[in-house]
Amino acid sequence: MRVIIESDYQALSEWAANYVAQRINQFQPSSERPFV
Image 1 (tube, rainbow, N blue to C red):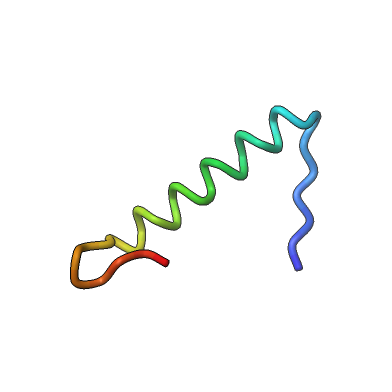
Image 2: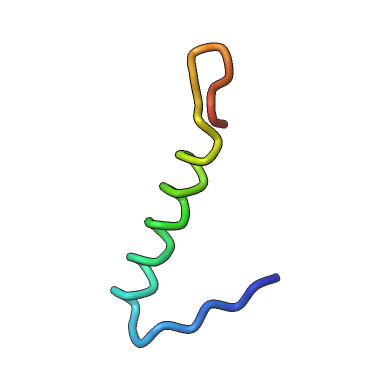
């Protein structure tokens, strides 16, 4: 498990949203290979 420490809830929420978006983009989803 990774522990991410940020200054406040807003910064942590932003980090998490960027992380999820990055992972989706790295996966390169398509109609044949959707991201689930």
